[in-house]
Structures are given as structure tokens and as C-alpha cells.
Length: 266
Image (cartoon, rainbow, N blue to C red; front, top):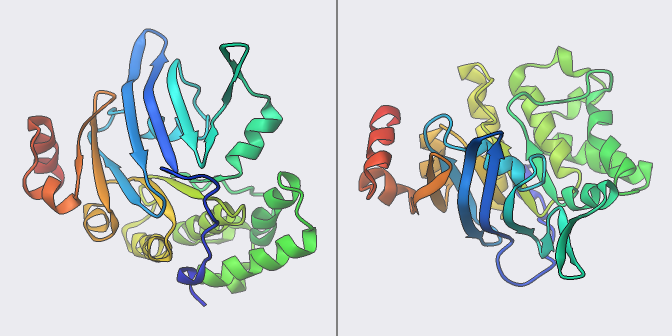
């Protein structure tokens, strides 16, 4: 069994699965994101690259409202995330409504964020039952299926602390997939791993891409980007400065800042 057998949920709307319009984000008096607008199609794999502090992770976190925004709109799978129009003005939705929106967006963090007091299996089935109201027996069966697909069927009863970093990250991916998301977000998922563990996580991500999962990835793994990405987006100082086919951007960048960045990482 392989993650390439994973069935990607049907998109619930026509048009791009992700659409952002003029995203603005500030931390105090410091602007982090400025007029970030893009569209991502169903099944597309997009990798965000750029120097540290470019706003890549912050942008990723705005997509499921882990970071609020000061301006612009975010639409995922036909829903405006975190907000709605009421009486001609924009208002925040309730925490309950936001939790249901987030269920459509899987997020894999740098540092796994597994619940240490739960077993591996409990980490995976917990949210589908609590957030989506799935039957526990069905959620457990699906959790076991996902564990098998990421090569960890024998770790169901283990605690996260007993696993290697690569194994914990694969569990984190299975946990995100358990919600049957339409979109997967990865925030530098291999940056906290020892070098020998990076490959096993990247392979699961490659298999997911082959299965047709829409993915937005913040990564410094340029080999992975070249192999898997449909599009690479270069960010600097909170804006998108360049985007396109990875091979074209990497071999013939049009922006001087992109050339400077790539000269240090390629």
C-alpha cells in the first residue's frame, strides 16, 4: 500500500482551489506581507522559496487563518477563509465556523506538533472525530490505513517521543490527511530533521503529489522543488517577485534578487 493510492477529495467549487487577493500582514509597525495575490489550481504543486524573512511561512499561515490579515481576501475551495460579508461590511466568522474551514486545509509544521500524551494512532483519529464528528470506529480504521500508506503500520501504539524525527513527520502528514483535506500546506517539513531522515519525508510528499494532491510547500530543498513542483514562487520582503516553471526560474531568473538568492542555495 502506498500514499499514491490516496484519494484526493473532490473540489467543491469551480475555478482555482486557492485564490488570494492583495494580502496585507503587519506585526506592529513592520509590514510582513504586501499585496500578495495568486491563484493555485487543483492538483498543482507550488513551492515557495526565498531568503529568510521573506514572508513565506507567514503567508502559508494566513491561508488557514493561523495568522490574521490586515487586508485582502483568502479563498480556499470556494470558501472565503475567516471572514464573510454582512450588511455590506466584512466580519469575522465564529471560531466554530473557522474550525470547519480549517478541516479542508491540512497543515504540516516544521516541528511535527504531535500530542505527546497520545499514541500515534490517537494523534491521527482524534481530530476527525472531534472536529468533523466522524464515527470513532471509522476514523480509527482510516487512521490505520494512512499509517500503512506512510510505512508506519507497526507504530500505531507507540508514543511520538519513541519515534525518529522522520517517523514523527510522516505521522504528522498522516494526521493531516486524516481530515481528508482538499489542500495540503507544508512549512519547511524537513528543516528539523537529521539529513538521513529527509529522504523518507520527501518521498511521502512526492507520492502525494503523484496522487494529485494540491500542495503549497515552503522549502529550501531545491532538488525536491525541481523534481515535483509545477511552479516555484520566489518571495522577498513580503512580496512575490518572480514565479514560473522551476527549471526556467532556476536557470534563467528574471529578477536580480532571485539571482542573488539562487547563487547561495544552488
